[in-house]
View 1: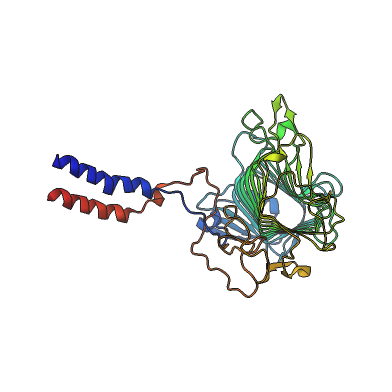
View 2: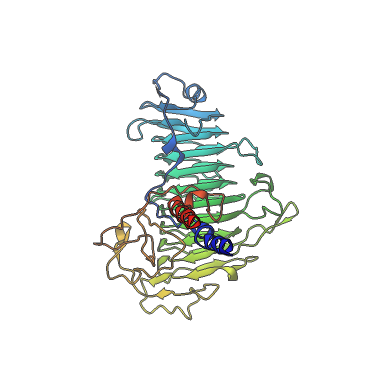
Length: 483
């Protein structure tokens, strides 16, 4: 009997706490994006001379090579295949000066791995600007771990469907700190087909004389992409297109009853959309999020919910469904067409609209209840209407909130955890793209994040278990048995 009591006590104080200690990681507050580059080591710095052939030098790169390109203009179409570094030793291609290395033409990369492009200008291509592809190996992962950082890309294409940056079948990537403008009127700035696990962060898209139809597009089976902390200016059609319309032969992985959507699990958060025709569009995508953005004077619609493909190759596609539009601030004039453009064959009633602020700047008496413009497809939860959000300096795109703003801490938690400047949100968070108000001290993040997409949806691992309390409990239990 005494032994049975001791075993029961042992279970209570030792075994049960083991299970209660295994918890999913808390939501992390990003202070910056940590990429695979942080763990990489340079083995060999190659300072390219002005007479070296660009294709020959890059195609001959070895893991750990850091190629420094001179202050020079290279003209032509450059093709590279199998440029593959490793996790320990990536390959760097870095321009000199402040974008004083210029590529006048096109750069085509196939089956690249652990590759970093940084600090140069690319312009004047009559085709795509930078092309990253998988050589048509649609059901293989041969194109992964790529960083495109701090480039200037412009004057690309013409009027055809050509893109400044074209990504096909790319996994685990970061498109960061770039300035992209003056693209083809029929194309996109960044076009993703069948891409997985990536970040589009801290970029500036567009200028005052905008012509590219779409700034960022994610389609063809694209999954798990975060678009955060970017500025989108004057998109003639769609600022961010979540989904789209893709030919049957180009999906990655190939379309099937399991992969029967244009895009899934996309997050568009903490961005600024300045005078875009339609800032965001949900197009044949499922379970996607648009949260904590500033939509500054959308020209025609604030958002669109569409379905451009219903069936391909005998496979019935999922309808656009289960999107979330939350914590956004929308400044508009009553001349816009609609708040939301809803197309046929969508499941718009599965969408959730909550904790958004709408403010009509040219009509103080705008009638949200009866106006044909305010056509949200479901009842909006915790909406704020016709209260000035009080931005610090909206004419200069400074969308930090003033201390008396009605949007302070009026958001709903759970969707984002850091803001446009990678500062932690308070609980509850603000509406809009910034976590703090002007004059307030910026929150100090308590952790350094590694926001790398995880294949474990619960993010549970042995690293979450603290061993110290178990060791202490074990000593207590051993002492107990010794009595």
